[in-house]
Amino acid sequence: MGRVFLVELESAGSGCYRCRLCDTPLALSDHLLSDSFNCRKGRAYLFSNVVNISVGPPEERYMLSGMHTVEDILCCLCGQLLGWKYVSSSHLICCLW
Image (cartoon, rainbow, N blue to C red; front, top):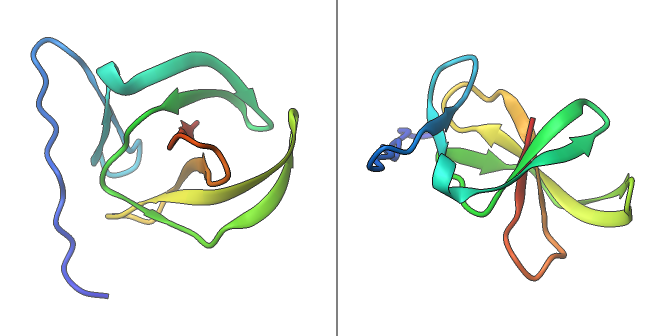
């Protein structure tokens, strides 16, 4: 697999979202687009930018808003499934739960 290099996140006064298993930094609070998003696992968060992730293959998934092409998002350090990202969207939007 190779060596894993983590991106450290720094922001003046802003919080940081982290993997709940290994505490790897994933996203800044400044990159949170919405915290009122829901998925089948419950409450979820939409981000404009995340780091320290690996992605799975694209797949078609039926969501509440219809069929979408998405890729699963995994923590690059521990491999924990974190959520998914929309592939067919014009913007990179990541949904983490």
